[in-house]
Image (cartoon, chains in turn blue, red):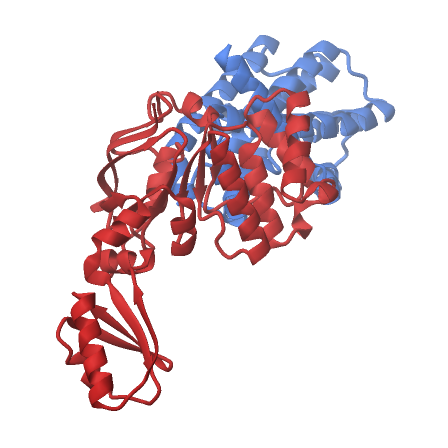
Length: 249
Length: 311
């Protein structure tokens, strides 16, 4: 009962986050345009069909939108002097953080439906819709969980510092995750590195949803996304509990 | 029943002890002032009481709930205005209150009723749909106090609630604090304004360098500090300040415009000296007042020798 109450309060935090941080024109435009530009930059001059582009496009759309704002929320709240009030309210740290995760999840999922719709309109046939839908939900939640992990350290109140550091993690992750080269075409060391990225498993799953071909099995893709999600959540909650007082001082 | 019980509360930052084993209790329905210079440990104490930071030692119990062992229940019955606090400036006054209602698990209908009543009480109802970004400092502080009251707290913790406010907002907030207290709310407040503390608080504690220097009722503290008694006087002509400092029982003389304030050990003896001096120098006494020490005098005498630390 107590945990349920806390969960309800985390939905209130999520609603507040959406109002304040996500429901803004520039954030929406960034979420839509940025992955598209990145994809065009890396595919121009190469003979690839929309179907070939689809897994990478979906992967980047979900990854960048669900990690776009999350890392900046806590530093921003500390800077605007609202964090101390939040922490003094009867909401546990995990519930506050889950609120941020829910907001990133909703934003990431809704924005990602747009490239999906565009791809379908351009003739991409999703043959395994349930697998894609489940994968999108899991991956978005996984990356939203990663977004709060990215804001743990340093416990600063300068959003730009956190965003710069989070970019240092997010961009390399895109390059090792099979966005531009499918995992099966990578050398052995490349595959090993790719296996450490949660994005790899969603892109593999997205490829399976349109072609029926994947490097890992479908249950593996789904299970690894769940494991990464739990890992990101547990580690970030523990670390935030430890570093939150420093962010407030 | 005690509303707040603090026992041996301690907070350290590395080698520096910010709060050094302080203990005090606050009765239910009391307005308790917590005073101290910058860096004395005031805000650290408030942050421990409100569960924002964890103490390194000791306990703080709010209406029977230990803030360390049962923080959610303790926070649930508290209303807090932290010193470093702001409303969400992107949200309207109304949405700020509704959001706080959700954080405290107040049903939506009750939240709406309370939000309406509070915004009316604090003179913000007409601006309920305006984003807090456009509010003046006084309006924001009134909104922050409304947010702290949405859960109808039994204990209200206010860190510098009137700091830097215009007279109207400051007076309104003090009136509401008194009104809430009459209705049974226990109030714990910090302030730098000695006049506010003297007018509002039934008891005050003065903290200095992380330790409690004194706790008592303001008037008792004033009476107990007989060494801080003073006489304010003015003559019809300019007189030599040194002459006055030679009076027996006078410890210090301060020139204040056309007046002098003499800090004395014994008022009666000094009055005799003053009349003798006036007679012998053919002076007329224009004004003469005996003054009890102000809370500010007591505060300064207890804290002026200390160096500020980290708060």
